[in-house]
Every structure is written in structure tokens, then in C-alpha cells.
Image 1 (tube, rainbow, N blue to C red):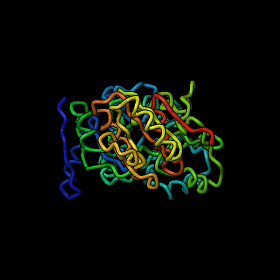
Image 2: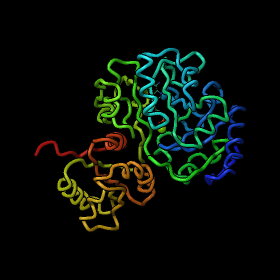
Image 3: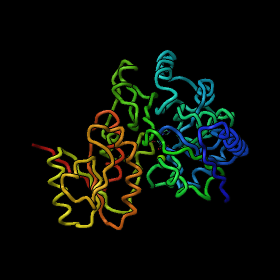
Length: 351
Ligand code: AMP
Ligand code: MG
């Protein structure tokens, strides 16, 4: 397949490229577009054949659902059958958090083919904040079903080069607009259960969600990335989010504990690469260390996470040693992704 690639510059010329992409969507094609979280691979959410092309292009298992992206609240009512919560509650959530990096799981309308949701009776809906994503949805005139634009099993794409690596020759159009601002996928919350359940941590802090909802939400071990469920609530949970081709050893604990374990590992695996939020600098092995953020600034850690994993995988090493971060705020999203990518977790459980 020939892929048309457009580099957007934030100028009025972008409109022509987005119009072209929207035309391709209306004709049943698939388009890569930027969002504020990661790049997405979209098709009309009402076109079963087009949606099938997404699963094929990614090599994605058919039971792993896609998120439906909308540009207005009117579109929300086209893709859901009814509201499982008070309209007032949903309006409040949407007013405060949309457009933004949060997906609500709601009952699916008949208009959305079951394939979009991997056969589930629910649908994940999000209104992205990225201007290119919004314009693309508007010009397409339909909601876009879109998962992240990586090959299945690879880290989500946060940079233009990641998209080109994974999707050249697989998508009809690619819209590139630099790095994605947040770097981890949206928070996913199931509003069809009582209490609402966090299915995937992301940039929206669950504490803020609880405040807005005025009730506790369920955050179980699966959301924390600690277990992969036998019968997952969200089919996405049963797949290792990203399975690196090398062993990824995750170390969780105090800086002192992390340093001690890293030192031991470097002795056993002298060529390992260490991915760290600054801490490993103290070891003095500059050549081995990829720094991806600071312990105190977890938004920077989230933004760099997937890029770092792609980088580490390309180095001529067998083992990747990664440092865990605090589970507060966006740190929970970082730890969910790291734990699900890890082949081994080393944790200090007692003092
Ligand atoms: P991706 O955009 O590639 O991160 O994939 C979308 C993810 O959203 C899936 O892997 C699921 O975790 C989640 N998701 C989407 N739709 C649903 C749904 N109807 N029920 C539960 N989880 C969903
Ligand atoms: Mg994905």
C-alpha cells in the first residue's frame, strides 16, 4: 500500500492535508493522526470493513476493543445506547474533562459495529483535545474508531519516527505533528459498573475523578498492572501491553534500594542498559544509563516512557533494567505500563 505522509506545521496549510485525510476516512480508509496522548490509527466507527483494516494493519487480536473518538457531545449520543449514570453526572464529567485524555466506557449503540468493541456490548468513548484530531473528526463527519498507531505488542508511538517505523505502507494517510504532549494513553473508566471501575490509569488522576463523581471508584490490582486477569474486565488487560524482545527487569523501592539492586545487576549483566529517573546517575556508569525523567516530575517520565523503551530495545544489550516510580497521579499510569512490560519485578516489600 502507498501511504501519503503529511508533515503538519501548525499553519493554515495543514487544513488541506486534514481534508485529504478526512476524504480517505469517508471512503473507508485508515489514517494515522496525532492526539494529546499518543498517535492513533483511525477509521470511521460506523464502517465495519474500515475497522477491520485497523485490526489487520496493527496485527491486533480481534477481542481487544478500540476507542471511539468524537468531536462533539452530539456524537456521544450516536455511539451509546443509553446513559448508565445520571445525565447530570456525565455532563459534569464531560464539562470538566473533555476534550481531554479520558475514555468513558458506556453501553454501545447498534450504530457502532460490535467489531469496534471486540464483541462487547459497551463502547469506549473519548473526545481528544489535540486540534488536528478534532479537525479530522469534524471534517470526516463521523466518530473515529482508533487504537494507538503501533504494531500490536510495540510501545505506543509518541514521535513521528515511531509512526513511520510501524505504519509506513500500512495506513492510507499519516498526519505527523511532532511529539505527542502527554506520551501515555488515556485514562479508561468504566461507568457501566457500580462503583465505576478504573480499567486503565492514564493522565487523568483517579483522585480527581473521585472528587468529580462524588464517590469512590474501584482501583484493583489489574489497573495497577500487578495481575493479568484470567477473565479480564477490559480485554486489553489480558495482553501484555507491550512485550519487549529483551528481558525487562523492573526495580521498585527507595532510591537506596534501587541503587543497590542495580549495582548487583550490572555485575551479573555488564552490558545491560539501565532506564532510570535520574537515580542511576549516582552509579557512575554513564554509558549504561538512559535517563527518562525525574522522580519528582512524573509527567516528564510519562512523556518519555515509550520513546525510552523503543530506544533501549534497539541497543545491543540483552537486559533492560528499569526503575519504578511513585504510583501517585500519572505515576500510576507509568507503573501500569512498566509492570505489564516487565518480565521480572524486584520489589522491596519490607523495611
Ligand atoms: P489503545 O487505544 O490501543 O490503547 O486500545 C484501547 C484500549 O481501551 C483497549 O485495549 C482497552 O483497554 C480499552 N477499551 C476500549 N474499549 C473498551 C470497552 N468497551 N471495554 C473495556 N475497555 C475498553
Ligand atoms: Mg495500544
